[in-house]
Length: 241
Length: 138
Image (cartoon, rainbow over all chains, first blue to last red):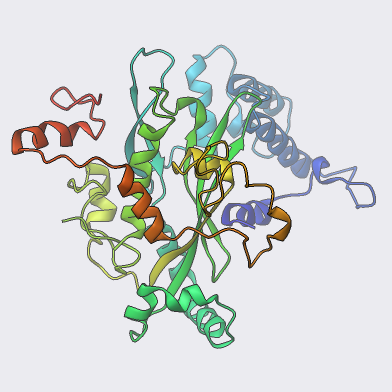
């Protein structure tokens, strides 16, 4: 389970979507619980591309006026506003506008409004910052777990044979092993994103580093390499010596 | 100088392209530059499906006639014929190594010696820079 999945699981409240045959489901929830369920369901529809931001905010606004509790009123926005305002309102509600911790890189790409290649700014998470954050949460536990894996010979020979381990193993600081994972993830029927994650193989925790929209990858004849090169260059900076 | 992060075990002192920190970076990243992370880490594995290895990393594709597999020296005609003999820890074909891969790449490269003027012309064009004074790519 990823870090964000863990957070979502901790924050999750029971709602109708959790219902499966054989599982207990509260068919008569309290008003506050029903309000939370409504907001969560509306946001799921929006995030899966089935509900536009203006529809989401308008439904939440009417629901809030009708007496729905929970986050309906903060999420709601009166009908008739400028269309861009609804998306900004939803982003602000979800905390998506808090991008200060993200790192910005410019990559060439494709823009349907431009004939030539377009430059696009993407937000990425630096691997060293995310791993440092994870390490700060429980440094002793992670170090202990690594020592345990080393002592019980669970780690593969490639770990001990790695030049980094052989060079720095005399130091009294842990040397973690990572895996980099790259795959496409569909988010609509027509488009997908390229997802780059790094996993700490000691803790098993995954961190999303980058998400790049496939439809915006360069189409100049480079097979996407124009867009990928800055990404690999940045990843090398995060990982390399 | 651009220093590395995880292997070096410290926060970097400049952006990934060697440029100075941006205004947004100064508040958070410039303050911790060169400070120790408290650990080192390195990438032991790169995982993904064949499609991503071919598309995003530029390795050869399965329909390549001479090198359909980026891990072994199988040819296109023989790729599937010996798969029954393959297992998780053995392969009927000779596996490629970094050395053989580098050698094959070098065999395809054409070396040209540039003078300083040509070098200054070509080098910035390798990076996509859309600023008014920057090279616009190809």
